[in-house]
Picture: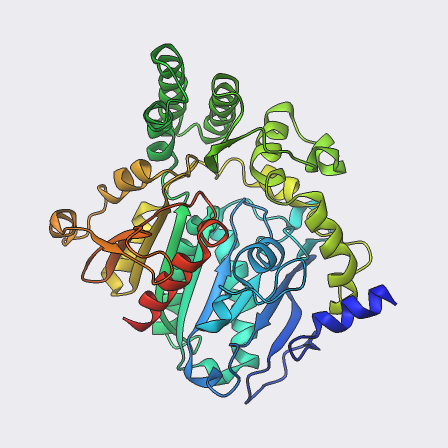
Amino acid sequence: MVKMMIFLTLLFFLAIPVNGSPRSSSIKGEDWGYVNVRENANMFWWFFGAENSATRANLPLILWLQGGPGASGAGYGNFKEIGPVDTNLKPRETAWTKKANLLFIDNPVGAGFSYASTDDAFTKNVTEIADDLYRVFSVFMEKYEVFAETPFYIFCDSYGGKMTSVFAELLYRAQKAGQIHCNLKGVALGDSWISAVDSVETWGPYLYQYNLLDQADLYKINNISKSTIDAVNAGRFAYATELWGETESLISETTDDVNVYNVLQHHVPSDFALKETYSKLSPNLQQLYKTHVGRFQQQSLADFMNGPVREKLGIIPSYVEWGSQSGDVFKYQSVDFMKPVIDYVDRLIKYGIKVVVFQGQLDMICDTPGAEKWINKLKWPGLSTFKSTPRKPIYLPETGKNTQAFVKTYENFSLYYIMNAGHMVPSDNGPMALQMVDEIINS
């Protein structure tokens, strides 16, 4: 009886599971399905129509891509950040469906409910990830031709920013060539892993300013950070990933295990060290997996996704366990992990796509100083004017003059500095994240 009540509660929105791609002239309240993107590679998508069914057709479409690489947008992004309900099945007051139609894709293959039947079906780099995303999105757009002229935006966080940059560039070119009918308007890169060297180089000074390091510890962090950067510059990317892991281990040791996603927290538990995939990783990757996957995809969420959510969806293969393959995704992406994608962001700006960067002030892993460093490397002609443009404070009615963010904009590029938020901005400061979405899609 309890399970049935949960199942009925989940049907808060109209829910019709789809495993094919018949065309739809209307916009459902909820929809989902699988796309076979390659042999032995299947990707899961989950769509939520805007909250007000009467205005759905007039509102933009937002795709959310989670980071990791290997985290689940359909799980974490949906139920912990921006989806219509939370894991207690209560309507989210700051759900992005209040402003737009919302699409999640578990990406890359192996993340969340997306799965690879063989090891050679995992992607090895961000270009392969973009190709798979393009196939999934193409199928979705074939089914929902009603969105062909709808303003389309890609929002993301963390490694999702790297994937978004490459995917958006691919999508833009396909759109211009008439290979897909959509209306890409912008990308919003949240605390994104765009240039690893710029993030790593700023970790020590950032932590020092928060009193999390003394000068002796700062010296140690800066030394190993420099070794990591030297490895990237020498093209030794696999070794750079190892050194990156060692840098984080030293940070954990010197800061009493600070949460790299929110530096006001320490000793955040990780249940995922118990997972089978964790035991198969090298010691270095175990530490990275525990730090970057486990702290967010905790066991309670896994139980929820593998229990009532699986039952509701009705199409998840019995051998696919939500979250269990994230370690494999990270492992296969480890060589590509430290490579920058600044040039992709540059091209998106050049194309006239609206490019937004948003940063949580409490995030270390993709900290704001690092973001400003890679932004300063853009070849965009408007960069010097952008840098001299003053920031504007943003207030919300419920918080009065307690500043919630700053923003600076020039032409089609914007940078948001979000207060009271770490790496997962919508989770930490939902009202400000929703305000930002409104400004981006309506400006």
